[in-house]
Length: 249
Ligand SMILES: Nc1ncnc2c1ncn2[C@@H]1O[C@H](COP(=O)(O)OP(=O)(O)OP(=O)(O)O)[C@@H](O)[C@H]1O
Image 1 (cartoon, rainbow, N blue to C red):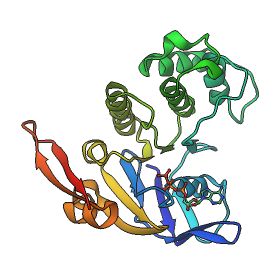
Image 2: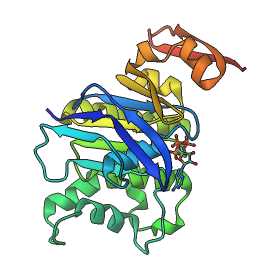
Image 3: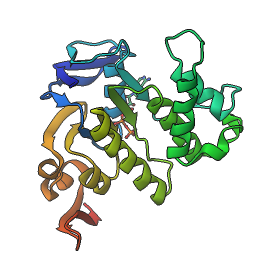
């Protein structure tokens, strides 16, 4: 099973230090990990640093990976400059790092990802013509078809309507369990974090201020201290945690 551990991980933009010595326990395949924290806390920077797009001190330790490219990354802004159809863009993501020798199973994976995410009908559309939410789902499909062992998703639900938020997070949690994939997702919706993630790491000003099981990390005290809101957490009739936010302080 794949594990990912961060050891005193730092990152800078120019001379400005953004992340300061982030150290985590080993996150294991099969888990969904939330990366939480207010705006500008350093969540996107952390993803870029883990994916190797930024330099800095410390180590990203990946153990137990079987493939050559174990990590896939879906950035916050998936962009849409390429003149490609949705289908072509997802197929291209599938073929990353390999010669463009498309096999039947590559096409089947693309078909499956588009269908699972509910965007098969968009296959022939140019990606530049999509809505923000449609583009975000295409970004998720591009990441999923790579069959990564570790999947980094930077705010994958930020442009989605409520149904699609729940749908995507449910798929991610199921795939984590089924494939033994480690999913790490930045989320602003702490209710979703409580419902769909196993572990949470909380960043504030580039520092890791809390890390552990999500229901132990996301507490009224943390919400007050880090997010500056008063809130309470209750159980709904189905026993799921419900976050009730009262006011900004
Ligand atoms: N390319 C860049 N060059 C210089 N500074 C940057 C760059 N990208 C981000 N920053 C700065 O790094 C800090 C952390 O930004 P980052 O995007 O990692 O935060 P975030 O937690 O993802 O925020 P948000 O929730 O708003 O998306 C911010 O102060 C931001 O202004």
